Amino acid sequence: MWGLQLLLTMAFSCFCWLPSSRGKTLRGSFSSSSAWMLQGQSISHFQFYGDHALLCVRINNIAAAVGKEAKIYLFQAQEWLRLQEGNQELYSCTEKLSKAPLTVTLNHTEHNLTVSQIPYPQTWYVFYVDKFTCDNNFEDSVLEDISFEMILLNPDAEGNPLDHFSAGESGLHEFFFLLVLVYFVTACIYAQSLWQAIKKGGPMHMVLKVLTTALLWQAGSALANYLHFSSYSKDGIGVPFMGSLAKFCDIASQIQMLYLLLSLCVGWTIGRMKKYQSRPLQWDSTPASTGIAVVIVIIQSILLLWEQFEDTKHHSYYAQHNLAEIFIIILRVCLALSLGYGLYQIITVERTTLKREFYITFAKGCILWFLCHPVLAAISFIFSDYQREKAITIGVIICQSVSMVILYRLFLSHSLYWEVSSLSSVTLPLTISSGHKSRPHF
Image 1 (cartoon, rainbow, N blue to C red):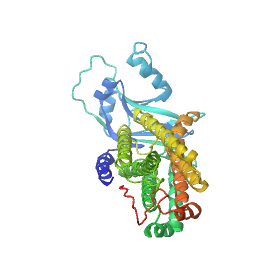
Image 2: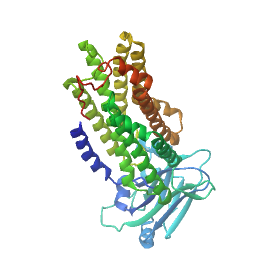
Image 3: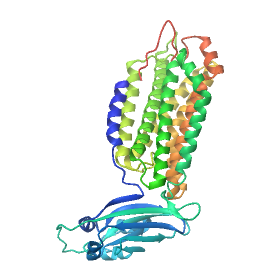
Image 4: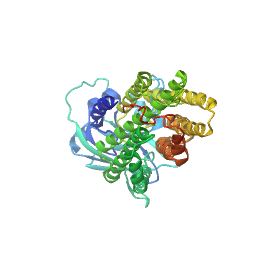
């Protein structure tokens, strides 16, 4: 498993250096060629809210902008998508651009446009257009590009246009601050006792090590996100590397937990199928259980990489709404159903109440981990567009944290951990006894 993680780390390190194109302080060049090919050069999109939202554009070449009759066009998302999805013959290039409700003529060094949002936040698309955009006789000759800086702002708590966060991102900075604070306080309270439990070994030693590693990855993701958002709130750019690092840590946590849960469930199921008499609940690191777990981990890793490469945004992990995310949701639903069915079969034939409660609690934590994303993605459609991404992101993080708490309580509980292990040193999953030691490799 360490070799697999090394390969994934190398792959993720490449993705972590992808530049972000979704900051709210944008720098680049307006290109007549790009605007002509696409019937408007796409610059960005932003979810404005409030009555004093602001778009600020600064250019460095007024003469070129005036000569090209350069303009900025703003379309509401629903209107723009309707124009794009409709019959192309219905609207000419000029007719389509004429439907833009807001325009800015670039004839000064700096331009400020106030965008009022009533009654609710909406997504606006920003395009660059000039006199060549709809010119059928335009030849792709060398034209001077216009360097620009664009800042998109929403009103802050005092109503001043100083907030770089869009409506879909507002509140995430505070959420990650509280999450980091919770991790810090929890570490101060429980870190020493957890370290002692891991250090002295015994039953569930390997499970606790892997579970703690997954938790540390998750905490690292929260910290990296907080640092990124802290910088982002000041300059609208943030630290793209920290945003990518947060994604990497989150994905590493997903992989670690997936391998742990699969190894346990598959190991127990295989043990039941073989009807072990001496150690019916023992998970041996057999080629079958390890192979199944590794194959599924590789499949999810590929899907997660695919999902992140399709979206260079550094704020979202669960709401990209692309084909890769659909496959991930299907995979997690299938895993939840199959593992739930396997655990159900074990629970129904288990005669010992204590062991049955052990499996029931484990099933709750396992199913919560796998189904939180699919369920939240399904119910997110009851929210407004600008609320869906936040609802899924925050909801998944909270649910998976609760799942980890359930598993920790299960494996550290005196009533289940020590009492069950005292029944027999070889009947509890992943126990390490003097006569037989399981050999899981993570």
